[in-house]
Length: 279
Image 1 (cartoon, rainbow, N blue to C red):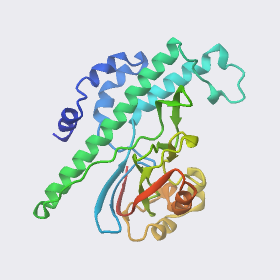
Image 2 (cartoon, rainbow, N blue to C red):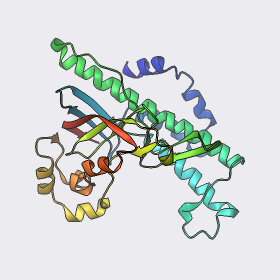
Image 3 (spheres, rainbow, N blue to C red):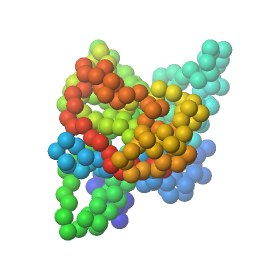
């Protein structure tokens, strides 16, 4: 199967074995986590087929650690908020773990496991998608170039100014010198394949996407399905009320966002989707 091929190719045979080491409060969710492996999810998660300026077809998808990642995060946030040093904060969501403590060690263990789950999840979906393309376009004998894998909303151990740091990228991707990245727009606008410029002042980072200009609730109140149809004209996608909050008008103009980060990345390819699948 596509899933087993990914496991073998990536050499992650002990992945599920390490599930025994995550927080006890989520261990009963293993069956659900297994079933959700290779699934898309909702919100801004998507699968797209796109064209670049040369007419080359690109397959692009966006997903994460699904429900198991959410439950692990909620577990550790709850623990952090109860710690003595996090009492009386101006915002309870500013609760933190202190380095070199058991709580931090447990959090990092579970965090890294969830990040690996997300990487597996995307790899399996891409393998399945490529299988479909091979079967449906058998006569054309499609070939695939190297994949670009790009985390966002994650933590990495990196070194800056002679210090070992934990870098949290929220809504951001790593953009180290020469490293490929993906910066999606929205379900009706362009996306970009980029190469990082290694700007250490920005901690070798760039935006994950266009970024929202309004909340989901605000978008639902402001836009209609008719607006969605108009803004996604030419794209085969859902155009019902269930995805109005993902309308292009709810996001910042991607071209403007790219202009503002010229010192962070260089554009390799500009993509325009013609099919967009939302969960």
